[in-house]
Length: 335
Image (cartoon, rainbow, N blue to C red; front, side):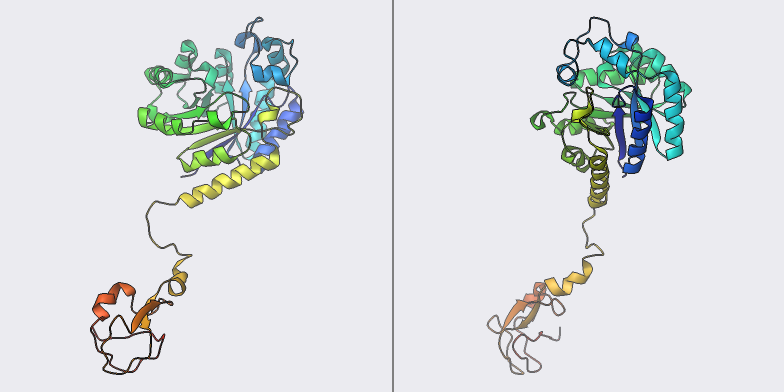
């Protein structure tokens, strides 16, 4: 099964359209399946009194309110139309997470086939109802949520009209970067077992190993933040991959997909040729004369595996040698 890899540009364009276009280029060049932005109106997303998250404060002006930060990072409807068109030109799926009701309408107008619910909206009932009635496939992140909140959100989405088969639930931790001890990757499997849904992982750790591990554990979707330069100003750059790291992650995920295989234990085509060199046959442990009884004192098992298998040991014991055998010569007997 091919993993759907989302290169999360988010707000790492810093409100600059040219940077946003370069992020599309970097995502397409990495081999990711989709590039994802964040669509919002700052005035509909945060009040003028809302503080920033601690990781946002650490990466931006400490005295700046969340609303002010979001205003700087906001792109208009025209920008998203242009980004969607350019993504199609580059052959990569365009996605964006809507953070308010008007943004859902905009993304619907742009013809997106997949809607993304960010972690912060999982307890927003009017928002979930609108998402659920959209007729789109839905990917929902679950950072900060417990199983009960996930169940409630799924009930709203399905009640509004989205079949459960069209929903993929992403395990997620919203700390940037996420400490490894807080990843709890096994929770992704718990979500799958609890709700019988497709699952994936939205990764905010440093590096690529946890995302790759999630694929090995059955993630059907991987989402990972990336940036053009980790030293750029802005809230998410430090916890994002640079383009060469994004390419390495995509390559690693694709290798893991190949390595997972179909689950049937059998010799692989590449290793069949090694049987003769690595397995053993029954050979003479000393010179044997014709007519001599083949006992454990005169035979042993050695490479190569081109003769009688040692699994036939009991069949050989007690037979008479029908000719002379030199030491290390493959034993042949009449059955």
